[in-house]
Amino acid sequence: MTDIFGHRSLQNLCLPIFSAPMFLVSGPELVVASCHNNIIGSFPAANARTTGQLEDWLKEITAKVDAKIHASWAINLITNKLNKRLADDLAITCQYKAPIVITALGHPGPVVEKVHAYGGLVFADVATVEQARKASKTGVDGLILIASGAGGHTGSICGFAFLAAVREFWQGLLVLGGAISSGAGILASQILGADFAYMGTRFISSKESLAKPEYKAMLVDSVAKDIINTAAFTGIPNNMLRQSIEKAGFDPDNIPSSAKSKLNFDDPHSGAKAWRDIWSAGHGVGEVKEILSVKEIVASLTTQYQETLQKPIITRRFI
Ligand SMILES: Cc1cc2nc3c(=O)[nH]c(=O)nc-3n(C[C@H](O)[C@H](O)[C@H](O)COP(=O)(O)O)c2cc1C
Image (tube, rainbow, N blue to C red; front, side, top):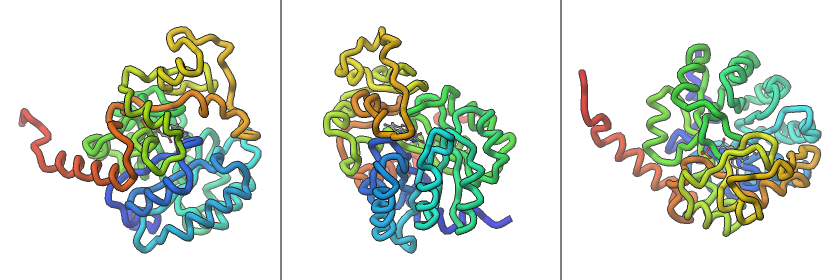
């Protein structure tokens, strides 16, 4: 078996991390800054308003990211029937040879064959062990486990248990997401058996993200107890910032069922009010202490990672 880490889509990394795709947050600037700072940058195709705009973004990203010296980039495609743009977005993705494609909310099958044909890698985003088992049989190269505490549509299984359960039947690439916001967290995910950490919340407040300044400032002011898990706004359990729920005029401890406004993937932006006005973050939000550039965030994570490696991690050894 060839060593998957030798694959061209996994080269030039300074840390084993993805800056995770985030609706209305990750655009070309965040992707390019991530790749230039040698971590995998990613974005949801739905952040581009049309397939035409997506093509403009892919032109920009491919012009600025040099595979010889930078880390690779990834595009996130919703692969269920509700995504009416899937065929067109997938065609453009293949035309621009996205090094990594991340599927979410649907069967990765149709994507796998097309992406493998030009030499790209496919990762499936899953939130339960059952979804992981199903996705593991579709020919994907990697699984992304969304554990509890993650920003966005979170999983509900603790990462420790999720990883152990999936490693029983999956020897391919494994990415762990959910409240990993520090260098020690990245190292811990590797110790548990993950190949990469998937980090969203830590990058929302980066200077290069599309998030509004008020959203970035709220992240700096928030800690884990400010995260409320609710399906009321997007129809799926979502970790959201208490202060943004209050700001939108709701009582976070008594959210009315009428608040429900499901996302409409026919036009992802038309159903985006929940994401635009009520903001999401994961349990790792307490690590967001200031608004920094991607370069500064990566430098800080690298220092923490190195320091954790150097100090005696285990204070009391039993053997
Ligand atoms: C604001 C926001 C938007 C998100 N949008 C998407 C998305 O469009 N597609 C997706 O697959 N995951 C999305 N996610 C989930 C992230 O890709 C990732 O799984 C999560 O941020 C990891 O957990 P962390 O935030 O605790 O680091 C989103 C997360 C956040 C915080």
